Structure formats: structure tokens, C-alpha cells
Image 1 (cartoon, rainbow, N blue to C red):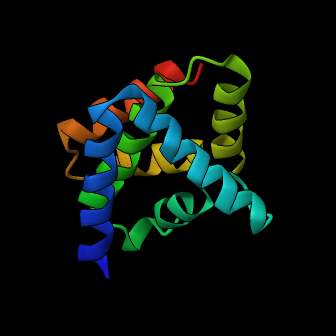
Image 2: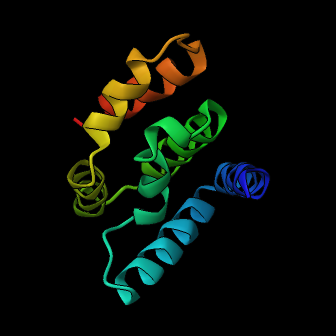
Length: 121
């Protein structure tokens, strides 16, 4: 299961980085699925992040990288804040603190969390 998750996240990141409009397509798909299931935006990804002791660092890094890639492509402030507010309501700050305080700390993970923190303010 973890290998499928990692591979899927890597493909989504490549797809989002290929063209800015692709990040919008990912966001549209996430929004449609989560709203149809009456769940908060990005709830599946946040569920993995909230499994703190069971989430491998690589998966966490890929999720945060995907968040950052999609957020950087959003030009509409309302949409941007809808996403960041949803992530915060699902415990993003708690997850950030947990992963940044976990030993050993990985530089790539710290960098992606810092990028997220700066962008979401």
C-alpha cells in the first residue's frame, strides 16, 4: 500500500509541476471528490499525515511537496485560503510540529514544511 501511495504522490507532483494548469486540475479533482463525500479538502492526505507514528518520512515529504506545488499555482486568494484553512482545521500545525520535532530530522522535510508555513501565512 505504501509503495502505491508514494508512486501516486510522485506522479501527481510531476504532473502538477509540468504545467501550472495541471495543479488546477488536481485541485479541481480533490475538491470534487471531497465535496461529494462531504469531507474537508485534502482529507485523504491529511489522514495520512495524522497517522504520525505510522507515516514514513518519504510519504510525508511527498504530501507536503504536493501541497506546496498546488498552492503555488493558485492565483485566487479565496481558493488559496479555503485550502490552507481546511488543512489547518484538520491539524496541519500539529502535524508540522510533530514531524519537525521527530529525530532524526531530514533537511528536505524541514524545507518543505517551512515553505508551506511561509506560503500559508
